[in-house]
Length: 408
Image 1 (cartoon, rainbow, N blue to C red):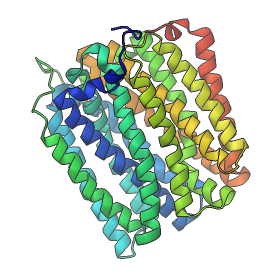
Image 2 (image 1 turned 90 degrees about the vertical axis):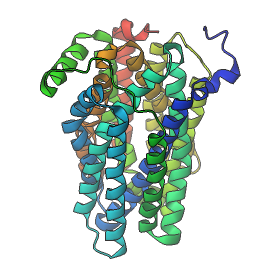
Image 3 (image 1 turned 180 degrees about the horizontal axis):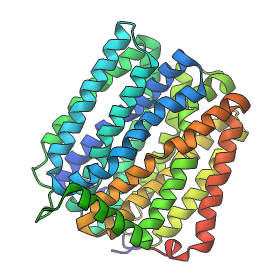
């Protein structure tokens, strides 16, 4: 089906598939807990330490775990029944969240507890995301994959708006522990939804070789495939330059904007608004023929949005610029996921998605140095420089790697 033949009613085409609906609901609940946890953790860490550097250290626990376990999670998703993997990982997250809530309630929470919580979250997502994303490609036909990826992002956008705002409100009314208790309840929705999925998702003829051999085979496949490698490199640029600003938002909110917890929630929600709008737009494109152009253009715009956000800290323009960043960054993520799911060999699909998770493991390369510098020169200057580098990296690929620009 061409973009010209696409009907607006097909914006929700993937949701007509029953099993995708349950998987989408599970992802929706997972996104809710992720977004609420980001606000609660950032608020609590900054309250305990007052340091952008410490904020960076705690957030990188998630990245360190994905760096070590993402590829293993992809291998297991190509070998083991995916529903079992997702149920076990969500169960671990549920227990982990309850422990943090209790530590806060009894007044014994410390920064290292939150670092450990971040590491365990990264470990869980190292198994959840490769299994979840590879499973989408098994439930959805190829021409609907971009729609499915966009609808998944619609859910993330919706939850990005609601969850960040709700977390700020809960902190103000009930304290930060209330956010973690709410997350504990929401995890039960994710687990129930996953349990409604059939016990499928294993490729025929599961590998009889060792896990290590399968892992190396996946790496060799991705490195030797120019398109796969190009997509991963662009993902690395986004992780290095586009992600750190979220980590520093509590410091920016307090010191630059003078906001309380509710204001922080609004700032964290603004990118979700942009992501929601952009996701709906991409979902309406159908089997869009210029995915490479959309990917590279979105990366350039996201970089420019970060420069504007850092350079013009005026309310409410700050929310507009953050929405622009969130929408553009989301477009790049959606297209990258769709292209990996579409063009990856089915035998290596989960490992391809896990390699994208591995890229997220390099977040400390952007966050930790930036956090140390931000404590000395301020968050706006650091974010502005990172936005410039992000736009420049995508523009360079646009000019010098035409095969990425032309991919459909």
